[in-house]
Length: 130
Image 1 (cartoon, helix red, strand yellow):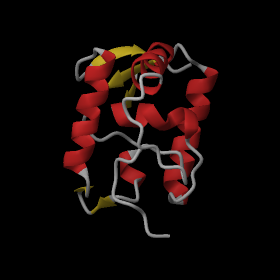
Image 2: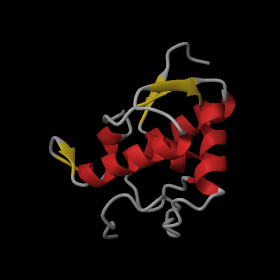
Image 3: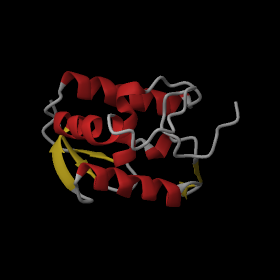
Image 4: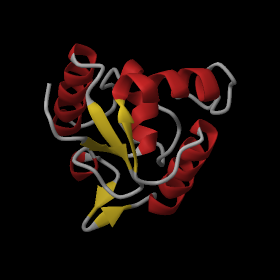
């Protein structure tokens, strides 16, 4: 387990358990599956939740030039995820604790029902053209 906290956008935390890679670039899929493996192996890994770009954003297919084409929508989702979990921007906790909060307060409560059935991602970004 790493000793440093993994910076993570809250909306990325929603998707980690169900990420299939369908419809995403090879670079993004590689980064995401690597993070999924790391967190599955070390559920006590500390994460810090913030609404700034993280290392996954750099490979996101919705990033154009210097920024995300859906930044305003993504920021609103990040804020909503933090609010539903009772957390503030910059909160630090373990991956296991955050996963439990997501499961109990968001997924089971049906707070974000717009799950994309094609790639299992929550509908945050503009639709991809395949």
